[in-house]
Image 1 (cartoon, rainbow, N blue to C red):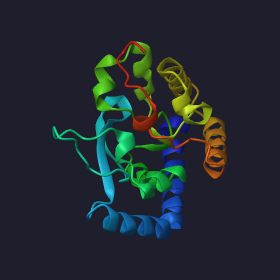
Image 2 (image 1 turned 90 degrees about the vertical axis):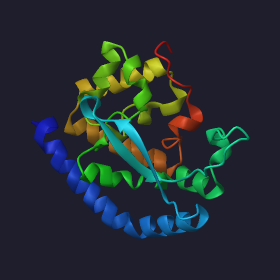
Image 3 (image 1 turned 120 degrees about the horizontal axis):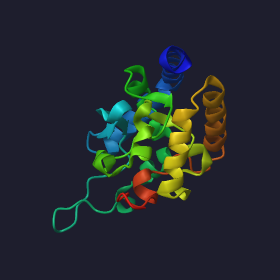
Image 4 (image 1 turned 60 degrees about the horizontal axis):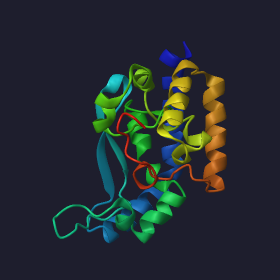
Length: 201
């Protein structure tokens, strides 16, 4: 009942209210990035959603497009701009994902959507993280996020899919808010601080 009906209504209410409240910040960040990133303020990337269905996740663009002499993008940590670090520190780069929630591709709470290239590498157990919609924040995010091993992260993600409830979601939201306010690494980028998943780690 909660997962199939109430959670979607809850997502819509929270996402719409949050987007309206944060809209002034949304406009300021977007305008600043338009100036700093040569007219590019958003970053779109394909990520797997519920049941592995791929969608385009949207974030504020916190990295430039600088490449090396071979035409390859520089490492992530060398491309994050000063303003990009700022919006990451305060989780402002996640605000556009509220639009993904409103459109039904994501949930406020759920396993973070990882890279599409990981899909064929998951075990049957790990695949269970796609039994629910991916979230802006999740159980793994409030329990260590990038300080966790892949194995531990997947166990936390699957635990959430098996224990989805209003109580669990509220707990995660409060823990997320606390971590954002004290800047305790909830928004550390998957790309910046995690090793690449290869199916064995």
